[in-house]
Length: 350
Image (tube, rainbow, N blue to C red):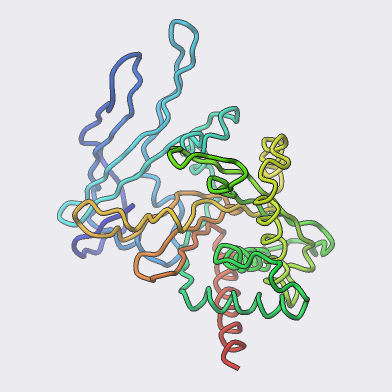
C-alpha cells in the first residue's frame, strides 16, 4: 500500500531501517515484528505507476519473516507475519505486510512453511509487474457478450454470469494467447484455472452470522487450449468458470479431500495453469489513515501463473487486475487485452 503526498523525480529505491519493534504480548516470544524504515530516495512515482515495473523494485519494502523456532516443550513457534512502514521524507509512505498463507485463509497449515519473500526473490531478471484497470463499461460489455452467446447456445438462465466470471474469462484468454512458445502448442491439451469460492453465505452450511473468519473452498476447472484461444474463447472460459461456481454453490464440500493434491498439481504445471488471488470485495482502497485513499494497493507476487484482483482507486465499479510476466509476454498481453476490449465495445455499439 502506497500513499503519496508530493512530487519528486528519483527512481532508485533503497531503504534504511530506523526502528524495529516487537508488537504484542511477550510470553514465549509470541510477537510480531514491526519495522520502520526510511527510503534513501524521495519518489513513489514508479511504485504507483500503471506501466510495467521490475518486480524487484518492491523488494526493499518487504519485511523479512523471522525463522520458526522450537519451544522447550517441542512446539514449533512460527511467526505468522511482519509489518514494515517505509517513509519517503516529505512525500509519503508505504505499508507492506508479509505473512504465511495460513493467516489469509486457514487452509494451508500443512503446506511447506516458506516465507513469501523467499519466493518473490527467486524470479527471472526480465519479469515485470503491471496493474490493469477494467472499467465498469468494460465489465458490462463483457457480460452482454457472454449473455448473448448464452442465448444463442440455449444457456439462458443456466450460467453464472458475474463480474468475477467475465473478468477471469477475459484475463485467462489474454494470458494464454500471450504465452511465448518455443514450440508449436498442443491445441488439444487441458489448461487449468484455479480460484476460491466464498461459502460463508451458503444456507446448507448453516454458518452463523457471528462467525469470524473465512470459509473458502478451492475450485478448479479445465478447458482445451483450442477452445480458449478460439473465436469464442471468452464465452468458453465463462462457461467453464461459471458452471464450476454453480457446482460449488450446490456441493461446496465436493472434492475437498483432494485440496492439497490440487495445490501440488498446480505447482508443477508451469504454463498450463492460472490461479486467482485477492478479490474486489476486500475494498482495499477504502483504507484511510487520515491521508485519503492509497495511491496503490497491490498484492506482491512474482508467479506468472498468478493473477490478482482488487477494487479500484478511482473507477467506481471497476476492477484492478495485477499480473507479473516477462517483458515480451507483458507487451503481448497488453496488446491482446486492448484489442479484445475494443472489439467487444464495437460489437456492443453495432
